[in-house]
Amino acid sequence: MQTESHPLRPFIPPVARVLLLGSFPPPRARWCIDFFYPNYINDMWRVMGVVFFHDKLHFVDESRRTFRLDLIVPFLETKGIALYDTATQVCRLKDNASDKFLEITQPTDVATLVKPMQMLQAIVTTGQKATDTLLETLRPLCGSIDPPAVGDCTPFVLHGRQLRFYRMPSTSRAYPLSLEKKAEKYAAMFCSLGLLAETPLNQNF
Image (tube, rainbow, N blue to C red; front, top):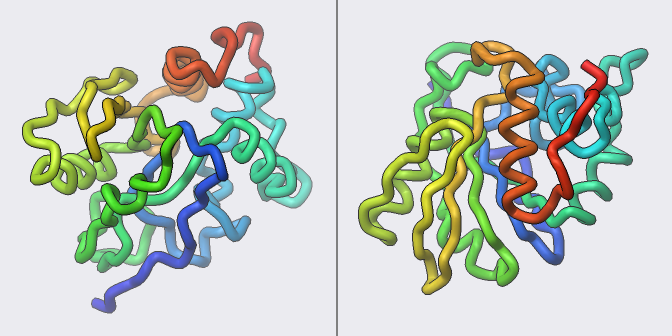
């Protein structure tokens, strides 16, 4: 097995308020965009479409089976949503995108990553592997941190700042929850952080 380094740089808007952390990108063969959550069958950008625009296809180009990066990037910059992953180096125990077969050889130095983000309110993990890795990374620095329930958060202190740690459901279709239910949980989180005025209604699923 070969060690695989993260192929993307952290995406950090000038005024980052929320940092979303996944585990690690899928193999390149599964990418449809050169960005985070690049697998066409991952529903992150559909969830974002539902939550913020009431339309799961807002960021989707169905005819080309890809995502609208020209809409995604300015949207993230406007909202102050930063993106990265909890691992910078991994070994794949199998040649697939499953977190179950992902061995993390170098976790991300999250404390250093977030230090310049002076407006940061919350760190959000988007799956179980990311949650477990983040907890292992933060506990030596922050002491005991209770893992929140899926869709919930727990407070913690980092660099002298009070932050929230949200644990969100994975947007992989392998996670046994409907797109509608995932969107509800993400919408509730963004509402609590002031990035969304109200929970979306009459979504286009």
